[in-house]
Image (cartoon, rainbow, N blue to C red):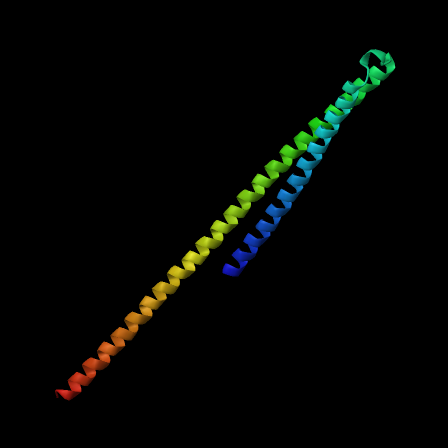
Amino acid sequence: MIEMAGRETDKAMQSLVQANNVLEQEKHQLNDLLRYREEYLQQFRQGDALQMSARKAIDLRSFLAQLDNAIRMQQRHVEQCFMQTQKQRQLWLEAKNKQRSIESLKERYQKEDEQRQLKLEQRLADEHTAMLWARKHK
């Protein structure tokens, strides 16, 4: 039973690690999108805005709208991954607590068994001593 609880804890830990890795990858991708947007705007600001054609301005606005949409979608995805990571963390904690409870119960039963064994040995020793004393004083 302890081994099974240990396997469950290990499996939950692996799921947590995997969820954490996915979260970090998604955060990295979001940061890349944000950085790309900032760099793109920086390049635009360095150019001469007065010489930009109306068509180029419309294309720029359209591109930035698409980029902002991609950023919002990625932010939602990061939030979902974060929630999944939190869920996996909770499952791992529950599995870990269950494992600790089982181990604690096992230790308690072992101590109780040891106490019973000691009492039995003491009782047998007392009975043996009483028999020897009774034989000696007959």
